[in-house]
Length: 201
Image 1 (cartoon, rainbow, N blue to C red):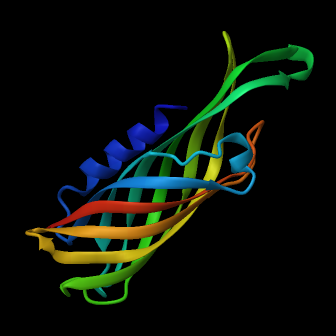
Image 2: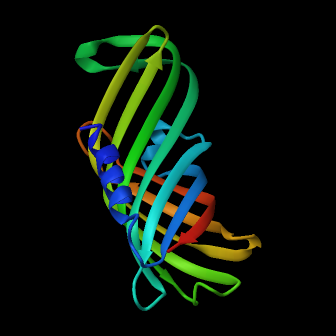
């Protein structure tokens, strides 16, 4: 199951190299803030969020579609606590919660101006799946849950076309939602993204 997202990305990338339409390649860093019930698991911001995407422009020049892979990591040191794990017992120790989220999404983006303009506002929708692994460390003990979840995210931002020579600077605000699945609570977080985008034919 863990290998499927990687295989899909490789097929997508190599399958589009020969395309004569204009392609957009983007690589981003994201700083994230947990919201909703996800804050009960990790209240600290996520300092590590990386993503890469490929999009192909449709004939109308303002609509593009493609795929994205993302990885988000959250860690929250919660101090000394006593936790009851039911049949697994009750434990006391220094508690740290971790989560890793690996996502693969289809992307649809609309540029509100022609992409040749100096500044281009855009909106983006992503739908796909994510593998999430959550772990709670209590002293010498660790309790782990993982599951594949549906994932959706929305973004709105600006692309600055002339700041980095042939590449563009991207700034965006994002919202991710992964509904509850298995033992995992609904996972929600907002983020600030900065990235670099380039175009090829």
